[in-house]
Image (cartoon, rainbow, N blue to C red):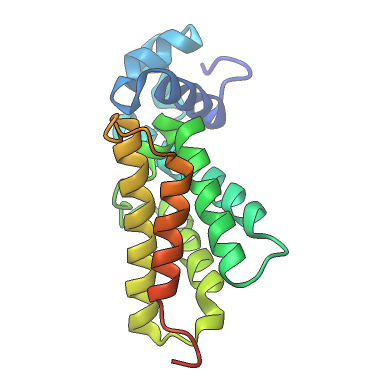
Length: 188
């Protein structure tokens, strides 16, 4: 019989806390069960094993990241919106390293919620790029470019790859401005 108050959302939240504190690899059925004070088999009342938990965690993380990015870019247009989006992305990676890592998984084609959350992330960037008059292929290239810049920056920073004393914020702004200047605009 399932424990009162324990549901899939509570299991996902426990996994999120473990991921952010100890890293995504620390999220196991045993660690989540221990955090919740239950036995591992009891988790199967709420999730579909470790793969199901990882999918739920990824969808949760993508939705949380999306809401932060959307809020950051709200009421802004053009490059300002893209810069605010980018700053919020880097901030999320700082504040939620385990959740951020879970967003990087390729979406499971059988998991509708995960597919939907991933698609919403891409659509937000496309929406922010709309004023540039890009065709579909150019939009794809621009989305991939921005995601690559942001992930590369976050990954290198998390791994201590930026050892020079130059301001990281200044570097991020420089990179983003160079990226934005390289994108075609309606007048190009």
